[in-house]
Image (cartoon, rainbow, N blue to C red):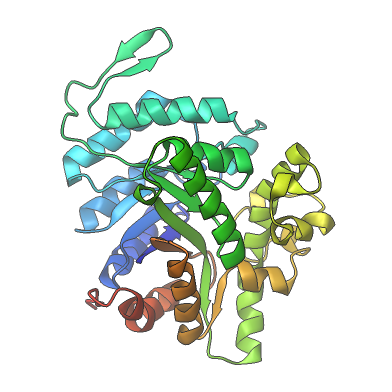
Length: 343
């Protein structure tokens, strides 16, 4: 299993680049960032600096969207980075959340998402693409290679992922929900005539390494509670679309949003988010990785048995450097024995 990290592009950008460099030093395989240009700084500018400061990590957004980014510009950006740094990018994409809602918009339709995936992937892999009534191609991008991974929760989005995506991103680490979503993606892939095992599976969630004390665990929960609020936005969309039973979505995913009272995107992805107070400890424990290194290793191995190829650490809390170090020293060597920290 690969281990990645998810950063926010909070200023100064040099700090984001430094965290990415530290992540590579500690054996992380991927560096992802949020993509909300109003809430944080422009990620694609920062990617060029991360790639220049590192040698091995793969870099990309978790996740971009088809609404606030022109698809051809997105593809051109990835293809340019690949030409400069040797095919070290990946495109995570979804229907749109914080980037869209901060502008007063709504997530795109799944049909639009599907079309954008085809355009971005074809162009960024040196192929032609149909945009409206025009066929376009980058004459300089024949060597570029880009995979497109789709973030999804609901049944129809999971079906689309299985039909067209190179990878699936699940933004929570509950093993039961992971098993259900992975099963839906793989079933859709098989029905579409694809090899289900060809789709990379990435689970992403906050991880906080504690000293094993009750006080340490409580602090970790408080630092990661924001994540339950973020996931609740997507779950609320599912419930509104499919009804209270979530269209077959597990109750473990839908029940906890009953106490949800709205959300302020100005606090999106922040520890101490006042709009995540409804999230109970049980949900934090299920959705995140909290506890001693042994606790993290046990849950990661459980996810690996479900077919998870990568776990990515959301690093939005007060122990960024300590978490990277703990993973590099105590966790990654147990999950990826061939990788050792180089600090």
